[in-house]
Length: 145
Ligand code: SF4
Ligand code: SF4
Image 1: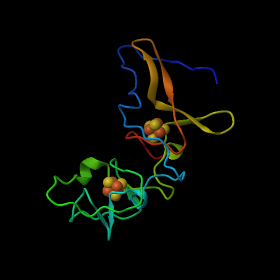
Image 2 (image 1 turned 30 degrees about the horizontal axis):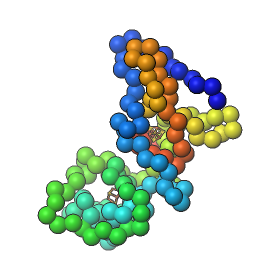
Image 3 (image 1 turned 45 degrees about the horizontal axis):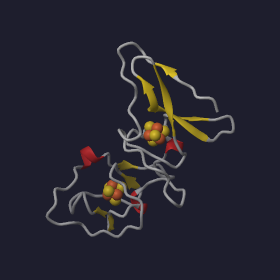
Image 4 (image 1 turned 180 degrees about the vertical axis):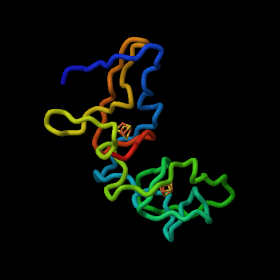
């Protein structure tokens, strides 16, 4: 596909880069992200970094997700993550992923392709190139569509 640079409105900075939004590559088994496939999930409706008082179910997700088999205990003597700041939400049934985010655009063969909220390249004040993303990637700008 030919590169498609998009114009910038005057005095408007380009969108953030993949690193700015903590873009994560697809999980190995091509699923979306939920607490059920996060190493920080502790079972019994608890998350190791949200602590012993926050109710967290396997069908939720937050911005600290790390893919892997749930295995961590609820850590002691750490500053627990606050749910109102971690992005803790009920995830869609297929988990959070670029493929169910409102910012994804598809190519001619209906494959998830580029993100309209993240810039791969930008020419300050002139134009920007949307980032290439994977249907099973994700980032902190994920917004359900
Ligand atoms: S709340 Fe976040 S860090 Fe905790 S288990 Fe769920 S995704 Fe992982
Ligand atoms: S499509 Fe959504 S989740 Fe994927 S990189 Fe763009 S903003 Fe992030």
